[in-house]
Length: 457
Ligand code: UD1
Ligand code: MG
Image 1 (tube, rainbow, N blue to C red):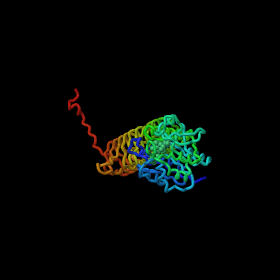
Image 2: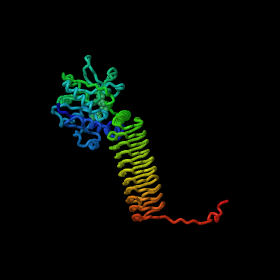
Image 3: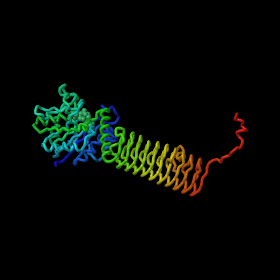
Image 4: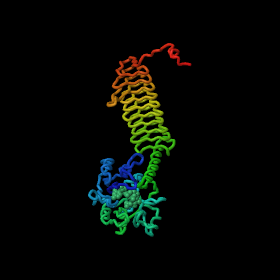
């Protein structure tokens, strides 16, 4: 196999996106477009990946890290000029270079592998990945001669009426003989409607030199979508979403309504888990087997065990064990650790708290900055008073504690092992092991008081 190199074009601003965020960093199913491209390319045995950066260079570099080398394109003078910036790194090397646009997030490794193969088999100097699509507006068109061989690519803006009728498009992915590419780039001019140096012009240049130039037409036209505006972004999102959902379903996850289920690209889900509609699962979330998630739940960067149920709830940056029951309408805020067999019921908010095995907060609670042991029962309406307006303090509730309803635990405070807190208490001092703490005014009954007030007519 020849040496393989890759150039990813990611320097453009993306004017048509009308956004502060640089185009290639716009996420599709939670992952920046250019990251999708790099993740696919990584499967291809490439010796060196060079990403061309310009607009938002530091941000793109921070996103991709050391998975790529970088070449800076100070001024964005066109896609040919962009590839030229990799000259110092690649020129003269023997091998095949694949060029991919950072705004084609749907392209798959298999398709890129196929174009490499095609290129090698035909001993070509350049191979274009093309597709036939219903609406080719905006794309470069593939111009073929009478024998059906590729002659050149004409950009939409430069195309004649007749050329615009051609529906075979340039997907923006190409394989080149590396040396021939950098030679040909020197001859690209910017005499066109946009005044840019077009990479597709390399095709015509090589063709005129009598070199072998071919096209590899893919049927997977959905993969070739180039995202230039928000309409295409939503389209890419839709296609990626159904691709992700389909792969989970094939792995044994039940998704009741795939069109209404939003799972980001890096999520892992175990077999026999059921996802109900209106659910979003985001970031690097890992969900175990036989869980029930949803309807209408949001899970962001959580690790969840097996047989856990989360209904109509939101959970962020937390770890949740097995056989846990959450919701409906619970909110698990970041840095919470919920161990096995826990119940977090309706209208309970948990923040930065550890919940030991088998503990319960079944109704209407706020538990923040807390360490809750195992087999603790937190009665309805009880809360940790963790904030004095300036600082946050820790509440410790040890194993087997019973907190009566509607109690306030004013932190810092420790409720020791096996103790009881009477309902309605405001606890400000530590409670010893096995003790009963009552911290509320004693009840006084005034006999006949109503009669005395003479309020009843
Ligand atoms: C390009 C192709 C077009 C093809 C389409 C496929 C050219 C001239 N046209 O058009 O034939 O059908 O992709 O989606 O190549 N970029 C840079 N530096 C620059 C200019 C662009 O790095 O100076 C990057 C952009 O960030 C983007 C990619 O190159 O990721 C493509 O640029 P874009 O402006 O989107 O080209 P299209 O008009 O889509
Ligand atoms: Mg584009």
